[in-house]
Image 1 (cartoon, rainbow, N blue to C red):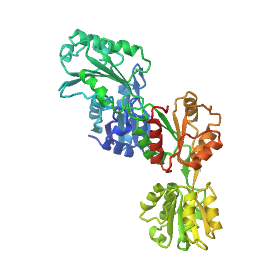
Image 2 (cartoon, helix red, strand yellow):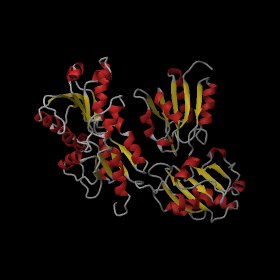
Image 3 (cartoon, helix red, strand yellow):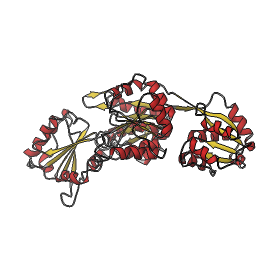
Image 4 (tube, rainbow, N blue to C red):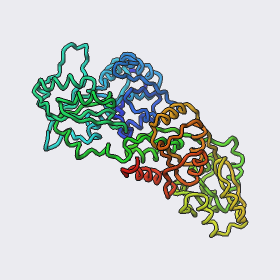
Length: 510
């Protein structure tokens, strides 16, 4: 082959972003170009590097946006210009994903390529609906069939008589031709009483499953507006297993839509916690962390760091910004050997420990008041304290320490600002249509910026529920005229996620 970049035909999995393979994620992180399809969960694009070129070539049933020939040619063009091209396809690229056709074309054009198999919807979607394709008590065989054959063939080449003898049949893309396919199965001898499940948007938080029998499933689907493509159809006695092992749709937050306002780079752990409980997440960062206009004050403090008795970190952002600047000035943690470290919160404490430094003070109450209480047990008179933090923050901590006799130098290590408003109109529409169940705020800044971005937000009596990480954030929410419903006793994202889950786990709560 001629010298080109490499095209990676990557299976994105059926929907749940956690189902992409480790290798697939790794390649997304290094790819120069990502070419993706309609059925790919766009949350996966969060894994890409900032300067990557992202191209959508989605093909939806009855609505082709780019022909396969043009996609093939695009892959070749990009491979001649870039080192790594990720071709991201829903499910597995070699199971009704036309990955074989693309690989053939790349081979003909002498373009280097690799196949990265993906988790297929064939097995993953039934599993998320509580259906095992094989089971010793029901069947030891299953088959996979396309739900709609290429209409240009003229005549079906599916062996319906043989198909009717298989224990479990999975029709991919099977919603549109459901009635026709069920009639063919009955015509081939399959009992009309055979259980059937239709699963749409499988493995997504909006997954919907409808069960019936071969004889009536089409009529049942026609009565439902929420059963639409993409969907798969499972035929066989194994469908009855759903009554016992329906785990995903029974999750406490399944069917709930949660808006996360935390900064993008810090929200992944919080999102993972909520998704693990079945929630659908809308990411809408209302603050963006950026460097200050000038590092002069921070640099002066770092250059005279040996003169400080204490360094106080009130957030992970402060830790990250401080140590980043420390390294940029050619220094390392050895210059901090004389200073004691105080922090607010376990997560901030862990961030400091990750830098190789032990923490001396962590209050049980993760806010300024808790740290002040601890400092009252220390003689801080004439001590010198450095507080690197956001440009805008509460004055309670530094002012109280000054009243106790300490010399407190508050320096701006980072600023938080409102991000671009590109998604604001979409969020407003969803809120006004009651399509968001829970708003989450993990700081006063996230709450303040949210309500300033959406000043004309309609105030609903029941939705959305507002969950705040702590009382300071809740106070900011109340200042805008809204009532927080959920405030955890410990002010961490883990406790916030657990409190949300606990609240909605009880049937009396909506």
